[in-house]
Every structure is written in structure tokens, then in C-alpha cells.
Image (tube, rainbow, N blue to C red):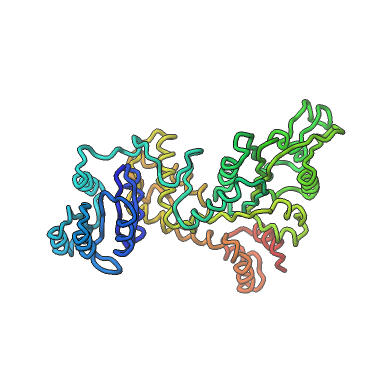
Length: 442
């Protein structure tokens, strides 16, 4: 695989190029300055440099002169605006292989890259390519990402995975908490044993004990056969309790007992069954606030929280945003059997501007729908259907660190009128009342 170094200080444009060229089968490194480009060229093998002529610490021509002085025979394609074609001519005289004018035509650029590399044929199309997107897990075909937030997140995953510590994953809805739980299991010593996931928010209160611990036939109305509980099913492996904050207080007490004694007692039996499970729990709630409100047990919180992982919001993952968009487009192409080639520049710009309050789940659904609407053509803004202003307002409200302050401010500005405050915050009155209770706002 050929390795291209992109030298461009416009991070959005650089990300667009990186994502597109990665899908075309190239390995990509990015640098935002001449100094960073020199380091990248010094540290590793580069087959081609794609360089802007205007950079924060000098001109692209300076990089060409440095390459010539070092006798580095790396082909360089310079990028420039139509207004600076004369500079491109000068760059050609200094050894640049070719130049391309901005705004860049992708197919023209690909042709110039292949010519500069001496390629006889074009790089493979995305649906034919067998190259993995950088950061994609081989185990489950999931993109981990390359941003600093992603690197920190998965460094914690790799750190805690080999241990038997209970892990609490905190994060907003749609940020990928279950994937992280699976990744911890896959990297653990229990990887060859079961991984059992339970959505605590979907279990009726009266059936929770049966789901967790099992029951004997006839032990209660509706128990028409024996049931193996999730803890016994996960024996030797990992049990993942999603949205654990939704468990009733009674079930919390039973769960604490199992975690302390490592034994379960199916409903309708008298004998305990020994189990060996590792617990990973997840929540999008503030469990400390729930403890203060006496809806979540503090002793259970400490039992499940031996190690905490915080999931970043999608809007906090900078350079990963376009990588995820293209990753989900590849999935959509496979599932819908549509040959959608990619995103138009205006669509990519909108994807980067939007705050994605529903995070990865919202992006996947948006891209799937857009791929269907585009009917095989490149995806444009009209296919995405994003309301950037509304989406960004919702995302701002959902920031857990500032949510309480925003609610208090809205109530003050509305003189305590909850209906007006809810309207100002873009939420319904019932949601506002739930937030008031959660944050103990009088």
C-alpha cells in the first residue's frame, strides 16, 4: 500500500482528503506545518507528498527546497488556488511532480497521484478495497478512531481489559458503550467465554430477578418452564448491564448480594449456584446525583465502579467525524446494496459542523437514510436532512457538565415558569420535571 503525506493546515479539508484517499486504498499521514512534514518524512517511508503552498510556518516551496537539499526523491504534488498558479509553476521548477488547483477535483487528483506514483491502474474503488480504515477493529469491524479522545479511550480499554476489575462506562446515549464493553471482553482472559448483554431499561421490574438469576418452572405465574438467568449464562465470562441506573432499588439489593458472594439463587429454589462473572456496567445518568436522591445504592455504586471509563461525545472526536461518516457509508452500501461513491464537499462540511446530539447512533441512521435517498449518487446536503441549528442547541443542552446550570439559568430568566423554561431549553415539560428531580433543583 502506497503511503501519502498530506501537508495542509486547513484541518477540515485535510480530513476530507484523508478520508477519501483512505477509501481509495492509500495509507495517509497528515501534517499541518512544514516542521511537522519534515518530521513525518524523517520518521517514516513516504511515497508521495500532497502539499499546500500556503502554510503557517512558510511556503510549500520551502519543503521542496529542503527535500532537494536532503536528496530525497519523493514525488510532490502541490495544491494551490487559481490566483497563485505562478507559485505552482515555480514549485514545478523546484522539482514538484505536478500541481492541482483548489477547489480540488477528486478524480483529477487521483489521476495525478497515480501518474506520480507510476501506477498503471487506478486505486481500487471502495467496495473492492480490502484495506481496513485505520483504527478499525478486526474483531468486530468497528471504527475506533484516530482522535486524541479515541486514543485515550482505547488506551484505558487496553489497560483494564486483562484485569478482573468491574468497569463502569459513563456516556451519553449512542456513544458506543456496548462496543467498548465487548472490546474489554475480547481483550480479556475471558475472551473465549460468553459475553451476555442485558438492557436494564427494557426489563419490567417484576421480571428483573428472573432475567438475572433464573427461575424454576411454576415458581410464579407465567413461569411455564425453567429459565437460566443471565448470570449463570455468562458464567466464566462477562456480563454487561446497560443503563444500570434504571434498576429498581429491590433489584439493586439482590445484585449487590450476587456481586459480593458470587452466588445466585434462581427463583423457586433453595440452593445457591456459584458463578464466576466479570461485571461491566454502563449508564448515561449521573449516578452520584441518583445516590443523593436515594434512587441508587451507594454501596452498589462502589462495587461496580472499580474502574471508570468516560465515553467522549461524537462532536468531541474532531478528526474521527468524517472517518465514522465514511465507515457508516460503507456499511450502508453493503446493507442496501447501493454503490454510493461518497459525500459531496458541502455535505462533508455540514457533517463536520453538526454537533450530533444522538452521537454515533444518530450518524449511522442519518447516513443510512442519505444513502437510500441518494440512489447511487454522491450524498449531498439535501440527502442528509440535518438541521444544524436545532441539532447544535440540543447537543449543548445534553452536555452533562453544564446541563444543571443551563436549567437554573432558564428558570431564572422565566421567573420560575416551567413551561416557558422547557420551551426555551427545547425540551418538553415532563423532561424538565425529571431533570429538576435529578439535579434536586427547587
